[in-house]
Length: 306
Image (cartoon, rainbow, N blue to C red; front, side, top):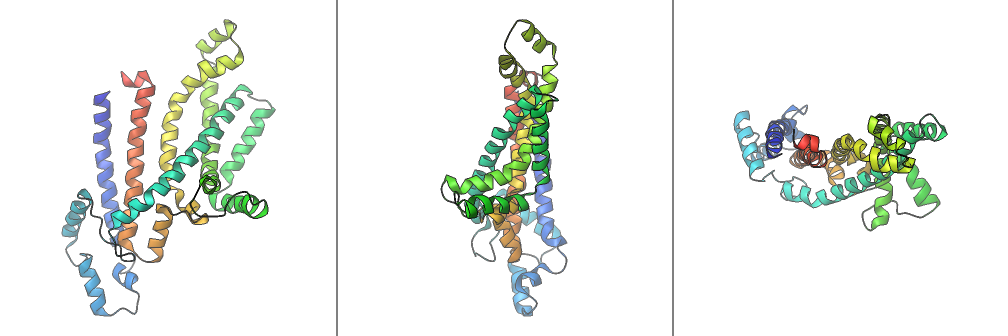
C-alpha cells in the first residue's frame, strides 16, 4: 500500500512540474506585449518599462523561469496588479467558495446518479430504464450556460423559492450546485448502470438469487458494493472536473470563487492573478486524482494488496 502511494506521488511530480511550466509560459505566449495590454495603448514608455521591470519581464527567459519556480516553492505567486495584494492570499480567500460549490455539486451528482443508475440496471429494457436514459441524454445536452438561467427564471423569478445569486446560506447553493452537477450526474448515471449490469450477470449474483434472497437485497447488499469500486475513481475525476469547470456557473450566479476571479483577472489584464488562479485549479486537479487513488486502494483490497 505504502509503495503504491509513493509510486503515485512520484508520478504526480512530473505532472506538477509541467503545470508550473505551462502557467509560466502563459504570459509569454499571449499575443502581443502583455505589459502593454495591462496598461493600455496610451501608456507611456516609462510606465511600460517600470511595470516590465517590476514583473521581472526584462530578465532573460531562463532567469525568469528559475525565479518563478523558486517563488512557487516558497508560496510567492507575485502581486496582483488590480488588488495590490499577494496573489496567493487573494486566491486562497476565494478557494473555499469554489470548494464548497464543487463539493455540494458532487453530492447532488451522486444523489441523483447512483439511485437512477441502479434502477435503470434493475429495470433493463423496461419503461423506467428508457425514461432514465432520456433524462440522462437531456442532462448531457443541456450546457451550464443554458441550464443556469432556466433554473433562475423558474425557481427564483417565477416561483421565488431561491435567491438569484451570491453566496450566503444553503439556499444560495441549491441552484448553482444543481447546475454544476446535472451534466456530471447524467454521465455518472450511465456508468453506474453499466457497472451494475456487469455485476448482475455475475455468478455470485446468480448464486444469491438461487438462495432465495430478495431482489432488493441482491441489488443493495451484493451487486452495488462491487459495482461501486470503479465508480469511486470516476467520482474522484469528476470532482476534479467540477473544480476546473466552475467558471461558467460562478459567473452566472455571481459566486465569489476562483472561476469568477479568473474571469475578472482576464478582464483587468491582471496576468499574475490569472496565473495564480490557473495554477491553483490545476494543482487541485492533480491532488484530487492522487487522493482518488488512495481512496480506491482503501476500498478495494485487490488494489491494496496487489
